[in-house]
Image (cartoon, rainbow, N blue to C red; front, side):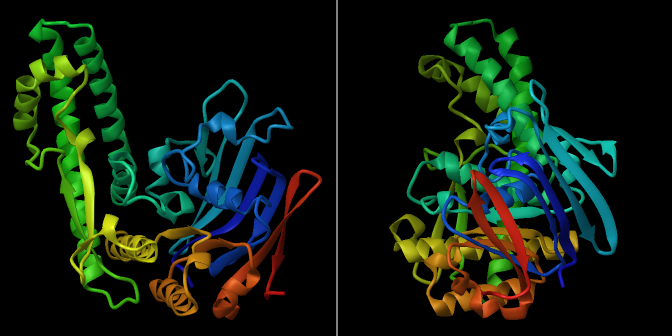
Length: 372
């Protein structure tokens, strides 16, 4: 059984679910149903029990059922090593998303101190062959799972950078206007760099120490010019100051962790992830998610909740069975989706099942102890 688990989940006017009340135990949850039935919406709801905008990165106002015209709400019970926490989050029209923990107003970062949630979704399948933005988000999400305050550092850095970029575009020359912003960028940027470096080290260690059916990924944080990024606040502030002229010509900041990229290679073959086959790229992603889970179990004391959307459909039967064995060995509660219940056959009684279907424009979820 999982040390960290969602044991109840209630949705009200969330996405395609007008109302859903799910009661589960600490085993993994296998969700099946047709495309568009509302399976991923359940995973998105669980992802919102952690800091951030959830697995779709959607705006809060976009999560409400459009036909209802009202706000949405998620309530959940999370069990962590014998301790129970009641979580509520949602949004009312014309207001921001709210979070309550054990009936007290809380910040999103506080959610990260209760439990960890990590995910793998189909939108991430092209991670290694598309732009650096997606890889930075992937790295920052992993970093956030280890350091809940990492999100605040990223927000602080981005805010200062936007203000500096505005000065650059306006052609402001006075150094006085830049110094305070560059100091804030340097302080938060150094924290971001340190957090990311630690995350890469943890993921690398968790991969090399494990026996797994999934290939290890050799990871490295790179800069666009191939050089080194200053990691100390004073050095980073100096680099920003020295880059002002070039930045003014570009109209944006060209130095800082916002330009970093995550490089990965299939370690056993010494082949860059972008040059691997589609199946190998997927296997590398799964390997990193499992490594994230193992590292969290070691550092946090409990494995994270895993959200795996349509993962089984892209694996051959041997790798699919191996993934389920890895999840059980990790001791994690995984919430998984598939269109066909047969894709969960190898789980047997090690999981509980939800059949999801659409009826009259609303998603319906039915709990099942066994596959049909």
